[in-house]
Length: 240
Image (cartoon, rainbow, N blue to C red):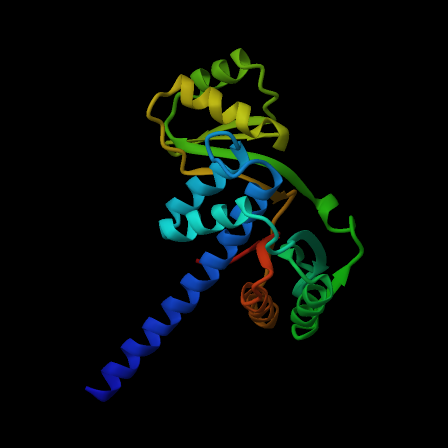
């Protein structure tokens, strides 16, 4: 019974730590979006999108409400966005996006993660040039023509519409995100989007194995453990 209890306790603590990290991540994003615009999801498309994403990731309602209410009040934290680029194990490429209230601490933490895995930070712009920055909207379906017609009718500048294995995915410039999403929801009432985000996509993928793969996975784990790190984009094809 003792060993079973210890395993359960370890699982509970691990889950709690993961949940805490998730809540912290969304708390900062919600705060920033509400502070940059208005603390009302109905009048702030960026905030509304983050609220929807947080709910899909099972973030508790009180966490969402607290972050928005905090932004509506005076004072509070002063978070700034920071982006770091780096070369990881085996020639891999990474973009690390952070929200921080202490830039010195954040760059030190990120640099330490790279140093511990024999990786190195790169000059700004040297890695991002190997990625496309795109709005991505994806849902279950196969009516590619109707999607293209909806985008055309709404005057959305779409880069590409891809239909594969019962899923339609739209790739568009980041500035077209909300216009593309609105056009989709009007063309397909009741549509549930499986992916709705703005992200970096690598021009090509890279496979790693052996020590390089182990070191890369360690680098990802170290970065994910940093409270300031929000998103990590890379060009590695991970197994599984």
